Length: 153
Image 1 (spheres, rainbow, N blue to C red):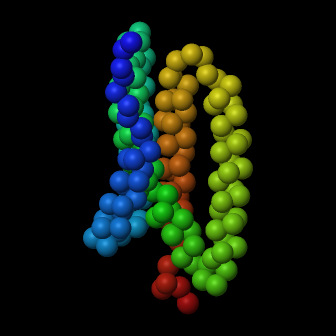
Image 2 (image 1 turned 180 degrees about the vertical axis):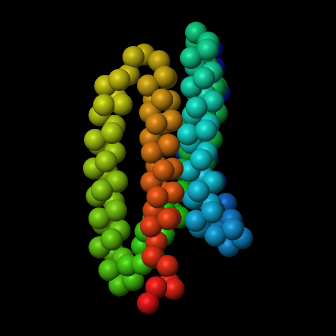
Image 3 (image 1 turned 90 degrees about the vertical axis):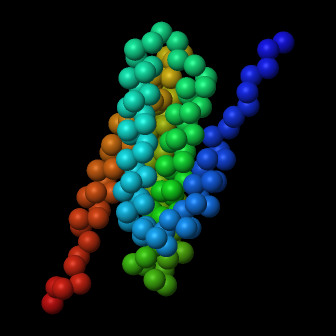
């Protein structure tokens, strides 16, 4: 019986969340979100190139890719939610419910076609992370430029 190393990507999300508290105080939420949002599509694009260039990608490669992506996600989740709630003040609870519903709804709409694209390889999942990561990065970039300035009268 062959024993495979057990490695889960979940701890990387938790480590990133813990590290986030120290990073936010030093760099600010917006900068962390922008940098962390770059992590997923860049790492995924590199791993997609690896998957397409070799016949069989390894479990270890997949776990390294997952760990790096989940580390970026761990840095993004809390900061994006906090940035979304910032202007809502007393109705932040309602805003959190709307954000939770909307993100779940979009995940269903995107997850079903991605799941149906499964062809026995990692390629559809990795390609999905590339495309959706780039879309997310563009949305964050667009949202940061749509803020009204405080100098308007």
